[in-house]
Image (cartoon, rainbow, N blue to C red):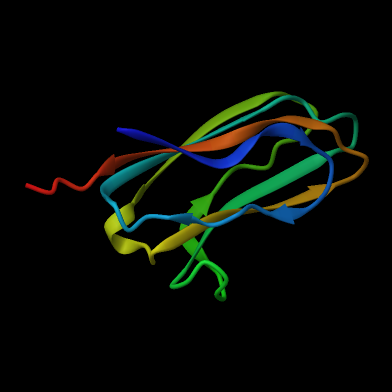
Length: 116
């Protein structure tokens, strides 16, 4: 099992797209774990997984790979996707609402392909 830093731990205050991660060396199920602090009164963050054929390519949403919105309550959430059904590159796109200061990140846990 390998850890993929999809959204490195940081203070998140604005909408952004994380840097893409190459899945060429991975196969099978991949767990995504979101861990964010409360963002402040009236704050929200929505995060989803996207994929593309190339790192700088056109990313599209992965069906069903959307975290529940986080607001002014800390949240730890898990999603599981099949990396075999994804394009080569994945990223997290997140939208921040209100005056927000979320602390946390999103990690992926994936299985390296066996090369024998």
